[in-house]
Image (cartoon, rainbow, N blue to C red):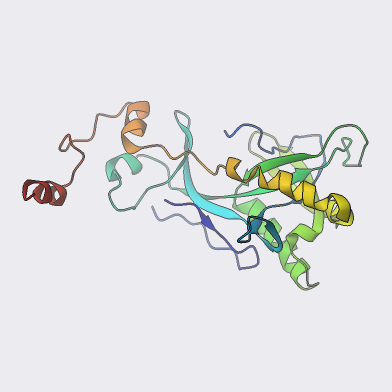
Length: 229
């Protein structure tokens, strides 16, 4: 399963399935955060295009023995016996957020620093973001034009509520905007929806017997082509 870009303005897809990155943003119970989504496509020069907000999506499985892994269920060449042992895959999304220093109620403070963090979340949060983005689109803006208040009802499961906090504060300081966006871009390669773990390693971690087959890893067509050389 590959990670792919999605259009936040498009209607949310159904995620009815067919079958820990460090320093990431996590909401906390009892704390209201003020954040702004600051993940954009890059132009040919490598600069962020502020008119083109970006978001990633992929299908994942969670298992207590291996954590969250990218799904290869149904992919060509995948170990179907292995992947059928997982619960059905679910869709996960990812972006990058700017987290402002605030008190517990989300009010800005002079203590602390701006944080630029990868954020991964499930479909309920995506749907809330989609609704906010749809409203911003009617104003000729995108999701990055507003700051959001984030409150959390369950830290472990990351059940969050979102509300528009007002215009994006980082956009209101033109002389610092480029520097802040550059800091966000440095975080882009830290985005992790799930770990890409080889089938044989998953088998080992889950205590399953090694997959039967030729030891070279070639399929029959590969072997025939090799012998014909």
